[in-house]
Image 1 (cartoon, rainbow, N blue to C red):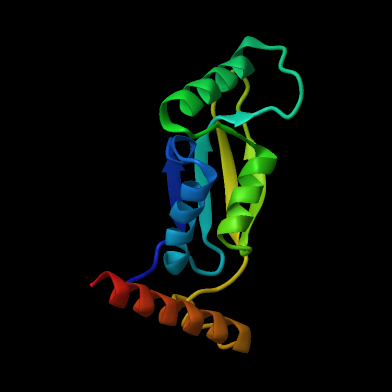
Image 2: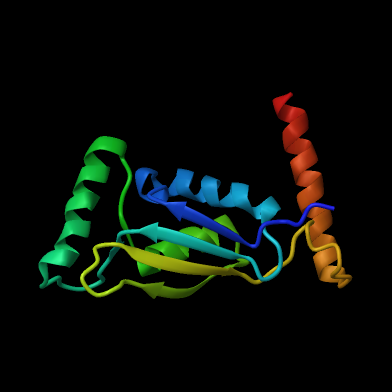
Length: 145
């Protein structure tokens, strides 16, 4: 049996997309997620308040570029949390880290639920969620064929 992945990295992905499409990208990861999996999002994370240092200003410049070219955006930590929760409530932002002097941040996201990949977990909730995901995937495949 193939071991399912336990970590995913999205680098420079979500900032190219409006919330609607970023949510879809995150939803497409759900079938592959399993209990305890991590999602690492490597992007610009905008400050919530006034920006005083030159390094942080770069993210706001990228935000203007993303809006102009792609109708997309850079996001604050709260906006990432909103998009993640909109994709699936089992995504939980565990940490947002920006190394000193860096323009980029890492949003560390945990997976609190289970999925169809959690075959060892026999709780009724997990079985119910796994069955729903399986039915949903089969339905989507049938539509697109």
